[in-house]
Image (cartoon, rainbow, N blue to C red; front, side, top):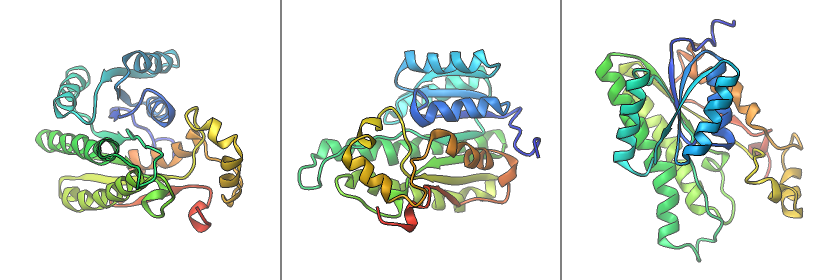
Length: 255
């Protein structure tokens, strides 16, 4: 079973790798033997993540990339290939949100969320697939969506809409790219505790959300590692167009 999840020889790119889920994903992939390209907009944080991975014997390289900028994406792939070769595992993790009601939401905020969560994921997925096809290689693309791709909550309309669209895009790309031996799957996390949302979940409102999760706890980034390793490795060789929900049973309850 250990060899089933072995990623030795694979080149993995993680977007949004400078913190939160992304840094956890980068460390897990490197720990399984992959060479990791850690991308994001914050150079210093990417270097910190890669340094921590190197301290445990992993191989990771920081590359600054803005998924909303096509030229930045292209340049990042050039850097990745010059160092390691063709990226054959992509974790599309970059995402942003805004906490405004739909009546008060500005066009700029809507565009910022959709351009990162949906358009950005599309840009990176497409260039990954194009390069895999050109190299005659198989690959795995993993889109990080959300349980809000299935259900809605107040104050996050562009986030929910973009994640629902990304889930549908996952299925559409899985259909088109299967003939090229490129698998496209997704992970839908529920509420996962990070430094960014810790203060909210310590509030009364956050505690009320926690009580609606059947397992009565928040997820951790490590809770997503198992599904990630499944989809990144040959263990999921006959899976494409699938979405794994990791939410403590929250979709079975009320949001």
